[in-house]
Length: 426
Image (cartoon, rainbow, N blue to C red):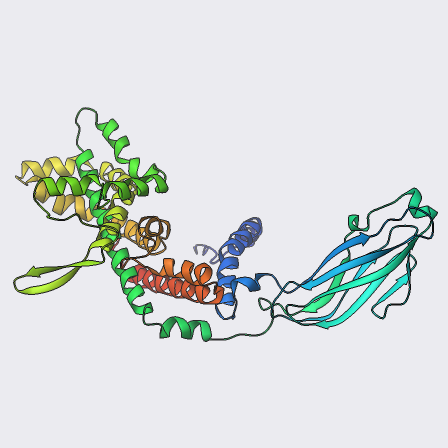
């Protein structure tokens, strides 16, 4: 007696259900893809363009229209004046001109080589105009009883302008000058080094503080829930408020910390924590330059964002079976040994995920450094450089090029991380 072999592969019904599922998910997938890839593609596009801040708007024709004169009786004449200028100082507009609709009863009298009236429609052709172009067109107009019965200010209807101006954002002109400027700058490699230093130590500091806080609050004691809520304050408080608080507390002239350090005799002179680049420190005859402002900013970063690590680590700790700790305690394991051999292996997975997220977020951090130091005193990172290139120097192309470098660094880190990241043992 032979037994029937079960069919292999995907059957027709499962295939139809799979197509239906993909069809239902397709709109969501397209929306997410557009939201994620749209700005990324635009940033790459701008990085290869010689775009300045003034180039966001292409050159256009600006017209200010006014009627000069008193029209009281039929046959009275006035002057219809159009003040014209090119909005750009250096960009050319080809085949420029405008069309306007004159109020009923208002007629252009006299010849003008640039403008032609057909019924109530007026068309003026200006030809090619250069950047910074300014001119006036004056037309003599006559009014009849129709206009006098219903006088309408010509300014109520704006002229329709036409012309062709090159838009540097959409044309086919590309260049590598932005990247050449970024990589040839003597400051770029210093800024990159500061960014990596700030990101690594800020991320590790937040994780260590979060691990310590989670271990502390994983035990049972009175008012534990209140303390957990207090620990969330740095993360939920507005960044501008906590940044201002730190600036006030660490002020070299009126700051509380400097006052305490001086009264205790720790320092002779106040320390400018956010304004002093470095101080020399001697260790066994070796002198190193200790980065004061950068270390202070890193301390702020670790303090502000440790609550996020604390929440995730605490949730993972509470999912570990208490029987493992009880068995270890019976075997004579100390609390440190329990943490090292039981808790830490169970936390490798969540610590790896937190390290990846915090590394990406910290590397992209702008507001903290900008509020505390403005990027001065050796705290300038790549994100601050993006802002300064794009808005302080008004070079959007160079700012986009730096943003591309940030993306490549984070993408490379993520690929390496996923390849070598540890897995959760739990």
